Image (cartoon, rainbow, N blue to C red; front, side, top):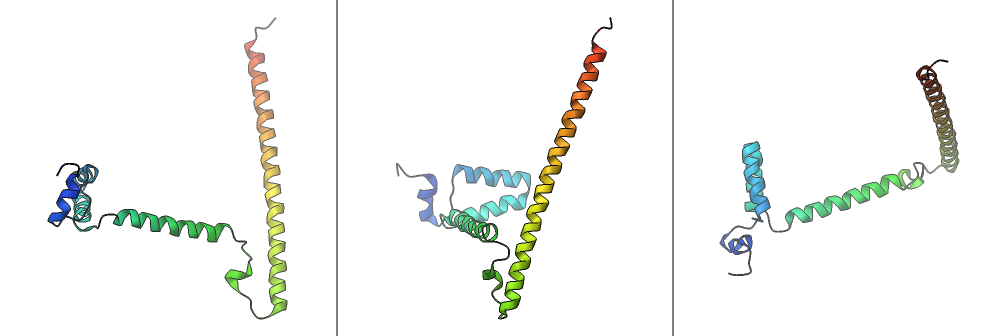
Length: 142
């Protein structure tokens, strides 16, 4: 039995989960904090197949990657999600309106950036005036 871990040795006795020191500590901590949490960790340790959790994490990561790719890399007006209506004139009108909306969004973004620059300049001017007033009051009068 040398060279094997405690969890590996006891899997032969019907224990299938991962009885690592970290899992045991999580179970004890779960019972101390809130008993159903400790019970859940105990159930996981008893009934889980080795690698279940990591397999679940891998699947969740893959779904998240697919979701990000689908929602962040396609234009909003792409015909693929909507398909065609069967009316070419309407599809062209929709594309034209979506392009107009994109141009309007871009114009608004530029205005927002210009306003933020304006606010920053005002803030710098106000800070300079307050600092100059402070320095004028601080200096001894002659």
